[in-house]
Length: 199
Image (tube, rainbow, N blue to C red):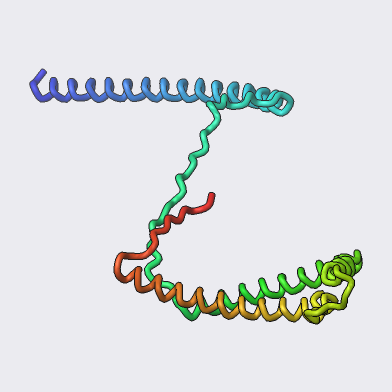
């Protein structure tokens, strides 16, 4: 037998061995896939049974850790300086405030006067003053009329005059005070104010 024939025979035997190995591998692959399919079908039936059980049995809750601590934000603070006060706005504000105070004062005096007049306090005061002035039995030499002192027109009139003076004085003093504040703030600085954000 020649060398060429020997080589051809050897090549044929090698190719036959390779084909046999490929067939063995395919057989192993087919059997493995069949086993996997069987396992999958068994797992499917198990999961179906587990699904039926899951419908009737509640899943255990996930274990919860310690409750979360709420983070408290620190309130923001702002340091400001009142460097100027507008006199015109101060005048308007003080005028309105003093006017409201005047109305409250006038109503309070009117109510108190009415109550005391109904109780007869002013009549008793008038008679007591007349008795003191006429203590010696003679007529009043001074010409005083105590009854006119406690008349409603005089009491409420004096209240109105005092209230009007208060309006003028309070408005003027507040306006002048704002101007003085502006002068002092220009020299030494204004009033420092710290503002904090409400929670």
